Image 1 (cartoon, one colour):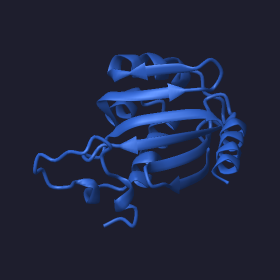
Image 2: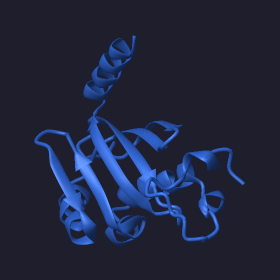
Image 3: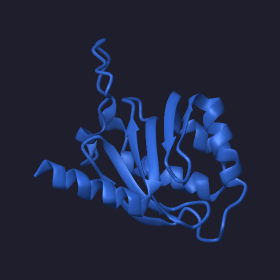
Length: 147
């Protein structure tokens, strides 16, 4: 059982009586599998980590939203095809109340922060990435706003 079990609940509020499967997977381990699939340029394994209706929002450069397997494949295929030697290096990984946040080096070797949320069955439901500098500015602004 993972210490992060409370971080992996569905945001859709499944109330159909199905047992909570969040305790059966570890979000951090799933994100490490995600990194390994990226490093290995294993697009099929990478896509299998996402739910069929998953959404990815990328703000690294021009903002892009990809939804569903076909759009995720279109997003990831060129990125996995052009990796620099430091691509997908792990910088930091942190559990959050909503899932997992990962700081890593992009396919271009640039620092990126990506936040993952998960479905109850252990699939990635959503991910949102942006350059680390922007994510730190965003967090500082939110902290200032919060008082």
